Length: 83
Image (tube, rainbow, N blue to C red; front, side, top):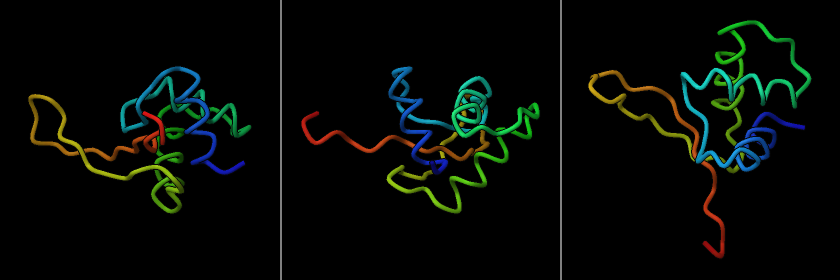
C-alpha cells in the first residue's frame, strides 16, 4: 500500500477532509496502516515527504494557518463523483 492510498482510507474512515502538517494523531493512524514505526513528530514529517513525492489522487496545496502568516502543506481528499 502506498502512503497516498493509506491517507485516503484513514481520512475517509475518520470523516476527515484531508491531512496536513500538524495532524499528529492522524499521521500516526496512517503510519500504523502502512506498518511504519512510530517516531513522534518524525512520523508526520516522513508522511509529508512521502505524499509530496507521490501525492497520488490527493490534492496537494499550501494553506495559511489561522492568525498566522505561516503556510503549511496540506493534502485534500479527491472529490467524490456523486458528491
